[in-house]
Image (cartoon, rainbow, N blue to C red; front, side, top):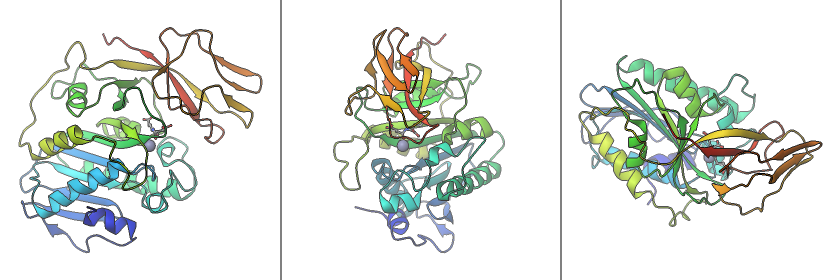
Length: 329
Ligand SMILES: O=C(O)CCC(=O)N[C@@H](CCC(=O)O)C(=O)O
Ligand SMILES: [Zn+2]
């Protein structure tokens, strides 16, 4: 059943008109449409940002965060950490589209656009900045941005994040992701214009984009199993302290790195993959992956796989990623 937070966003009205005490202690305040700051009764050393709906057609994780928000409102979910809950792109959610003018998850880099998605991205940056600034300077900062993908995937649930920092003794990001049901990690080595790349680089948050299944409209997400993620999120929200956990070795899941981006440079771009090619499909050396006028993208990596192949992006945007296994040191 739809909760109060999502209903408000879909009806284009506020969910709360003033700060509301939570039945289980603490309070919630609406900072903007689709942005709620939950504060626990006692001070916390854990600041958690959970976002979904940055792409308006990716509804399963939006339903999950709506249920979590409702459980906090009605007191059935205890809260021991600070939480910023975000439904990313309300106007795109209302229309059931990935974005309005420009992909919102490309508006967090050095050159954001000027359209409605870029304006919303700017507002989200301000809210997240305020949330972290209001927390304890020593708090552990974690951000999960929940998505679903255009295509099916040979590994259904996986994370995209920066490589773990071996110096971080408080927290094992890959162990948390494994506990939340992620079965692979794609580790970035360079910056990207995405929301989690921004919270990681600007706010030193342990930030990951979670891919959770195939994108479908509201009410059609029965095939996506978010139970493990939901259980872990509920556990973390209720935990008075976080277990100290240095990075484990070997990592608890297969890890990959980006061997290269495949950019769509022009209208001549052609992707030589079937439209139903799943994420993580293996590519073989010598395979012609794509052409763009005179530019040919031929696989020369061993054990390569493809992620997010999509020829229908705007010129200049990423039309796919070639990834390879990465044995973390
Ligand atoms: O299925 C697809 O082609 C895209 C799914 C999606 O929205 N993925 C995110 C990944 C973000 C990241 O690279 O960290 C995106 O493209 O924004
Ligand atoms: Zn997405």
